[in-house]
Length: 267
Image (cartoon, rainbow, N blue to C red):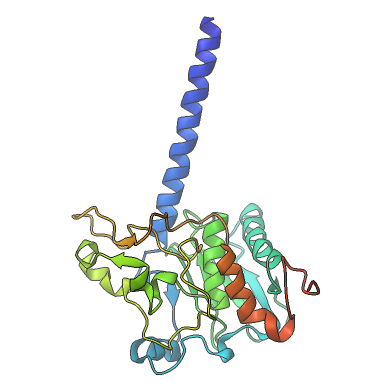
C-alpha cells in the first residue's frame, strides 16, 4: 500500500514538473518574440514595406513580395545542431502538408533565399520575399518550439498578425494603459488597404495571434489584448483553419488551383 502511494505521489510530482516546464517554455518563447525594436515585436520590414505601413498608401506585402511559385529556398546556419535543424525542417514540412508552399535547400542558382540564423536576438523574420535579404532568426534558447518556428515561417511567407488588422477593434479590445509605454506602437493597427486578408474573417485561433498579455507593462500586470468573446488567443501549437485558407489563397490559386493538405489536384 505504501509503495503504491509513493508511486502515485511520484506520478503527480512528475506531472507537475512537466506542466511547469511547458508553461515556462511557452512564456520564454512568447517573450523572445518581443525582444528588440522590431515591427510588432518579431517582424523586420524593408524600407518599402515600412513606408507602406506608416503611410498606408499601398499594401505591405504586394505580389512582388510573394515567393515565386510558392517555393522557398533556404540555408540553415551550421550553428544549429542536427537535431535543431531537423526541428526546423519538421516545422517546414508541417506547413507544406497543408499547402502548395514548398521549402528546399538553396541551389547555386537561387538568387532569393531564406537565411536561417541562430543569433541570440530572439525569434523574428523578414516579411515575404525581399529582393535584398530574407532572414529568419531562431535563438536556440526559446525559439525552437515547432509552433514558434511555424509562426515565423508564416511571416516569411507574407502573413501578418491578426491583431494588426484594420477591423480588429470589432473583435478585441486593446487596453492601451496596460501596454508598456515604450512598446505601444507594436499593438497599432494597419490602415485600410495596407494588408490583404483575402476576405477571411478575423481569426482568434491563428498561430499568428498575439497572447493576451503581449507587450504588457510589468507595473500593470494586466491583459493588453482582450477578446470581445470568450475565447483564448495566442496559441503556438498548430496553424488554424483560417491560417491555412489564407496561405492557400495567397499562393495556391495561380500555381496549384485548389489544394488540400498538400494534395493540389484534389477538387
